Amino acid sequence: MARPRILVVGAGFAGVECIRRLERRLAPAEADIALVTPNSYQLYLPLLPQVASGVLTPQSVAVSLRRSSRYRTRIVPGGVIGVDTRAKACVVRKITGEIEEHAYDHLVLAPGSVTRTFDIPGLAEHARGMKTLAEAAYLRDHVISQLDLADAGEDEAERAARLCFVVVGGGYAGTETAACLQRLTHHAVKRYPRLDPREITWHLVDLAPKLMPELGDSLGRTALDVLRRRGIQVSLGVSVAKASATEITLTDGRILPSRTLIWTAGVAASPLIGTLDAETVRGRLVVTPEMTVPGADGVFALGDAAAVPDLAAGEEGAICPPTAQHALRQGRTLADNLIATLRRQPLRPYVHKDLGLVVDLGGTDAVSKPLGIPLRGLPAQAVARGYHWSALRTNVAKARVLTNWLLNATAGDDFVRTGIQHPEPPTLRRFEHTDAYLSADQVRARTAALRASGPGTAG
Ligand SMILES: Cc1cc2nc3c(=O)[nH]c(=O)nc-3n(C[C@H](O)[C@H](O)[C@H](O)COP(=O)(O)OP(=O)(O)OC[C@H]3O[C@@H](n4cnc5c(N)ncnc54)[C@H](O)[C@@H]3O)c2cc1C
Image (cartoon, rainbow, N blue to C red; front, top):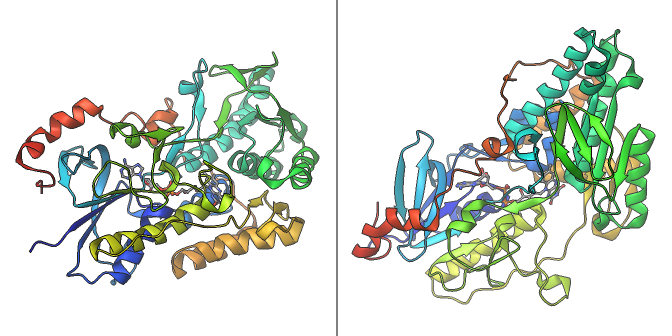
């Protein structure tokens, strides 16, 4: 008999953890495993602000999928652009642009999330996110190029706009991004004798009344104090009304002349979920506590893309927050459930009690709440870095990150602009490929032949 085909979509925290467990616990004769992923690495997203600020090189957070000879998963380089659960097939656009169908017996959907945007005039054209390696590298070059251009320019107004940076989103991603990039400009400006450091302004704005409410009032206030002490202007209860290439208008009426709008106001499930014709909660795919998709035979989903019930929260209807902490552990439980399905054994629900949050504000500034214990400053920083370091998947990645941290702490940064800027930089949509997907009708048109010949018959 042919071996069952397991197809995993997405090589993030959830997908990779699931695959590694399947590889360890399933004999090769029990199933074929394939992974569709646009990149050949797992991105360690929580360290992305440190890539943008130059503390880490991009390579150090791109953890190889091929490092060990023990790995036997077939990697398909591309992205899934549609799923037909009746035909049991995914439509894949390979990195060459070719489109092909891949049949499965068991599908694991772990495509993560994209930056959440709103219908704000100018946002789609002028905002940049912090969700991919390309965006982090782009932002670093962009910020340094603003210093270079301000330094070379004679026009006072243009200079002020180039030195005004706006970050939207007071969650951990936005707060870390603002804090880390402000440190970058604070140190970099010493190499620009023509620039007055007081000319550089950083703004962090959020519609919510508090920064990182999940940290609690006291730690949230500490984070706010750290940012304000560094001169970052934090505006709460405020968002962006409109944006252009040269200025950002806030909802409180202020107009900030600026060439930099960094948008980190939350995440939305991958648009792939919309191609499924299945039930969603706030865009995330509805799944059972065992992470199966109701009504879709053989389909599992997890991570940021799925609304996995949070059984440990003790609240009716609670779903797990979109964090790496959950995605990783869901990957393990899902692999066990997939193996149980193959062996006709009972599945078990996902239960994990949140371990807390770590927020690295750069240098010795940090706040964290491991296991509910509030920490500030150096102890919080040690916990934050220790946690991320130990969660890196390979020893080589661990060595790279540690070496980078040591080098940065001792030798600092050279603030080199690598020149990846372009007169017409990619938009958020292009960076995160959010318009790559097919409509449900287009998916069905591609899989019609498969449905006619019986589910799961493509190559
Ligand atoms: C700046 C930042 C800081 C963060 N800090 C923390 C933190 O401190 N602690 C914490 O717990 N969480 C943190 N998070 C959140 C955490 O990174 C996510 O919750 C986690 O990555 C979700 O895991 P995932 O596997 O669902 O998705 P991801 O890790 O995003 O992986 C999704 C994968 O799917 C791939 N993919 C996407 N679409 C397709 C497709 N159509 N076909 C094939 N592949 C596809 C992507 O390329 C990616 O490799 C942070 C996030 C950001 C952006």
